[in-house]
Image (cartoon, rainbow, N blue to C red):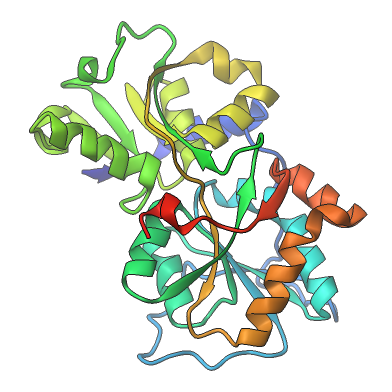
Length: 308
C-alpha cells in the first residue's frame, strides 16, 4: 500500500478546499510568533521526537485535547476550536488542541496521559480499550442517533454498482485503525476470501475522510470507504460533492466515534469533563460549539455498541 502524496494530491486537496469542502484555515501560529498571555494554542506534534518511555507527568496548568484525524488538520481546527475554547474557559485553563497524523499516534498520547481528553475513531477506541489504555467518557448524538455507518463511494460517472465491481481498481483507505475507513472494507474482503493487495489494483492511505472523498471526486481513487457522518455533513454543505460522488454500499450500524479519556486520569478531572460535555447543550455558548460540530448533544455511552 502507498500513501497518497505528491503534486497531484496537493492539487486535489487545494481544489477540494476551494469548493468549500471544509471550512476555514488551520488555527495556529507560525513558529516565530510570540504567544500572547492566555491565548489558546494549536500544537502540532508532527515533528516531535519519540516520547520517552513511561507515563507523562500531568500538566495541571493546561487542558490538552486530542482530536483524531477523522478530518484533515484544517477541518479539525475549524470544527473543534469553539468547543476547545469553551472547555478551556470553563476549566479556567489554556486549552491546547493536539493533533497527530494517525489514529495510533493519538492513542499512544492518550495511553501516556499526554492529552486529557480525546475525540477518536470507533476503531481506535476499541483498540485502546482492549489494551487497557483509555476509558469511554461520552458520545455525541447526531440526528437522534449514537450510531453511524461506512459508505463506500465512487465517482458519479463510475460504472461500479457494488463493492465487488471495484476489483482491480484504485481504492482509498483512511487509516489502519479507522473502523469505517479501513476495518470495515477489510472485513468485506475477508468475507470474499480476498486481501487488499490481490483484490485491488492499488491502495492508498489518505489519513482523513475528507481527503478520501477528495480523492474520489477528482478521480485519484476509483473508490473509498468513508464515515457516513462526515460524508452526509459535507454533502449538505456542498452540492458539488453529491454531484461528483455516489454511494454504492452501506455497512450496518456501528457505535459512533466516542469521546475518551486516559485510564490514568484523575477521577476529579474525569468527572468535571463529563459534566461539562453532558451539559453543553444547556449553555448558549455550548450550543454554538455543538452546532459547528453538527452535534445535537453529548450523552452517556452504551459500551455494548462497541463490543464491551
